[in-house]
Length: 199
Length: 235
Image (cartoon, rainbow over all chains, first blue to last red):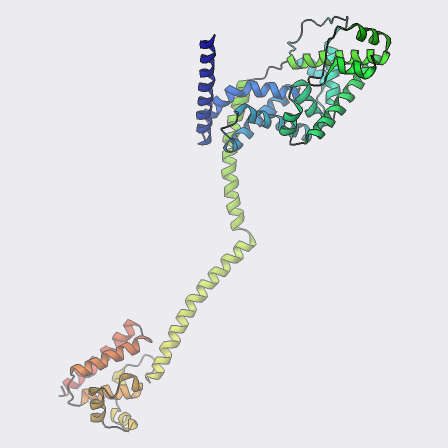
């Protein structure tokens, strides 16, 4: 067990070492090294972007934008901090920027057809409540109807499971402001769910 | 158990998800209270939807994204270079830069012509001082005796004065200088070392106003006079 732990620690260390060497190569303008760096982190970025942007084409566009920003700001990355934390911050800010600039709401009906939902197979809840695609669609719709700031904060905390402190740091907002926005977002979504349930 | 207590018990503020609590009091309250029942239902739907959203995945074309980013970066680089060149060109063609360039050129030309002009002025002044008409050399000066008479001194007095160091070249005006040269070559005076020194100091004095070529011409004239005098039977 101990040996396995040690080996995994060594693996992490090796990964970080190779990541730093890749970053160093990227800083010299090596685009092949950057492609390798993207290959390592693209799944992570994809996963974050998908929580905020639900349309495939737009999500791809935003992921591209994230990596372009990473390339441009790589010289500002502090090697003493985790690369994924730095990339996470850029990704969330890119999503926020996108939502702020593009006020049009994604066509959710089309989105539902496109989406490959690999989620819960046990849609039958213990209380007999059936969670259908339609319900997910409506909750997404309600999230989508929030203001951009509330949407980002709600997603970061209730979907991405970040803490209020982490969110306030990434968003550059005060703790109180994040808490207030989260509370409004939750209240608004719950009210809409209640109305939906009432028919 | 009251409603706020129920809310606290079933809602996990950290994860925004419903907490399943097996509590008879809670069940009793929920069964009796419509508001809490509705709240629990809403929370349950929200929790399940969030769970589903968390687990849902859109399959993105990673290869396509990577290639697009690399192409974008290449394009970005060339655009940056182009923009950089444009910036330089734009800067060159800004009115202020053009004005500055014109002023610089004007200043350089002005400086060049002013130097030329002041040189010309200096030469003219010197020519005036030496009583030389422009382009006229010393050979043309033929009335040496008359010129010397104007000095009120005999040639011997002057030569002695020079030899003894009583008269320096700076004490003489151009007319006297030219007369002296003519008379020296006409007379039987020897070109001794002191006279040569005098000529050298004269050269230094004149150097401020004449360039090397002009100075050379001046001394060539002296040599010509000497040659002429020697041909006429002088030394």
